[in-house]
Length: 247
Image (cartoon, rainbow, N blue to C red; front, side, top):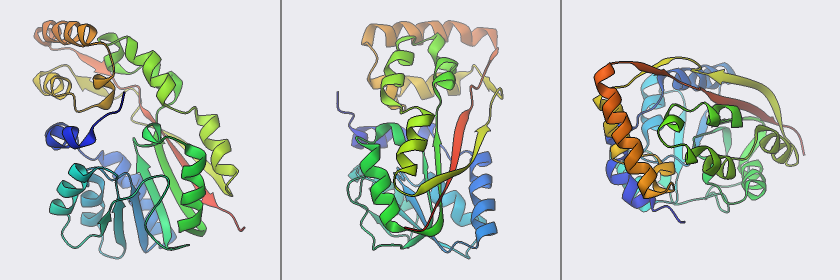
């Protein structure tokens, strides 16, 4: 099933935002390296671009995304930023243009990560840094909404490349792992109306892939849980840091 991100773009900003912890990690690395040209690959509606721009004016951020609807919103929120139509096959910038590239919750949407890393290697400078935020299979199994939508585990394991596959594919393109971090693990997520609204609007692509009867049943179960005022634990995400070696 093909997911229409132009449709998702209409509700995305009402339920999704840049993760402050991830933003801080990215900014600290950018400042440490003295990077000047930064790419947000799969920038969506530009939430991370907007947050990074607030942190400093010492670097230039660019964005690429294949969704016209996402780009339109990203451009509106980030005046003066070049946000282009691009994907894993073609990143519309010249060779060795970027010092730093990041992608957040994107790699599972890429059709061929081998092609992706070849293209990233082309536009990333030698000694440039790549940051990939994704989910491990363990994190998929422990994802809070798996309780409500159990088939999301099987579907997401088919969509998400394993951490090892990501590492090996990147290494084949002279992009080598330098560090792996687990972020936001076991932080509390309140079961409240805001959480219900985010799932009800299907702002997460996985919710458009599970069976509709399971989706409705899961929402009903979540609605019943609202009265308990409990919380669920975040399974966290995996942030993989890479650096491009010489050719």
